[in-house]
Image (cartoon, rainbow, N blue to C red; front, side):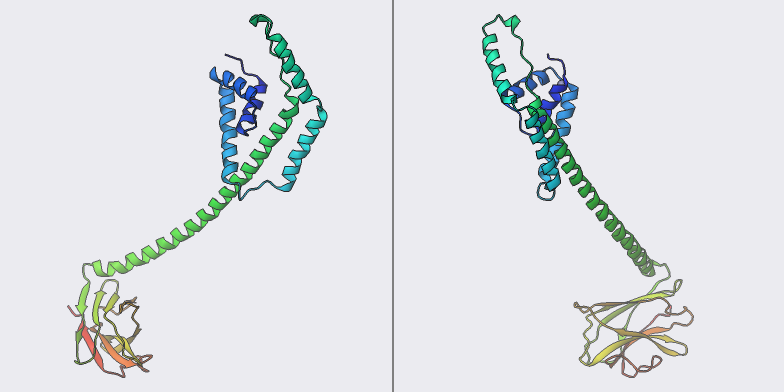
Length: 286
Ligand SMILES: [Zn+2]
């Protein structure tokens, strides 16, 4: 079991960056075999940073200044110890000599770290800077998505509240449901079901098989004591369906029936009187 030294963290950085040599790898593994929480934490953090960098590589290429800062650092380190590799060779030679000594006397010389530890740390710092930037971008993207999702949720909640209010029309205990019956033969008439809730005075009128003859429009009417009142022309969707929602169809005392007339395109010119034939009608009186 070898005690933890600062140098081991440099080996961890080199290993995470894939720039460790065999001798260093062997030394680090010997050290890790004895268990070292500090090195394990460093390896896990560096490994995560490198992973992040790999994942964000296309989006987060290091900025030019960052790369040149790292390269400057490498050149500065190289200039500071120009003989580093030569020293290493000398030490290896000493090692060979030392091999002839009895094992107990074998003293491993300090490794020449200076030549690469600087750039290894600079590179690790660059990895962390890039991965931090990448993480920030991811977080920023998520923040924007979250805001958009919250907006959609709020809209969906408003829509749902409206749908609930309208579906309450049909579930209201006093709701009156009437299928409008044809008053004339011949024409292709839609199927129309009116649901009226006396307590809210709301009505939902559902249309099926609504095929409007060319140049015409179907117009919906509420029949009140003082005569009919237009509820507007009804246009079908692509499936021949339509739904008309009426906020105030009148009080239960005044609303007598719903009716449908076939008008010229655009509807009757008089909102209190159909101009064309009334083709369907249904009483909502209990
Ligand atoms: Zn350690």
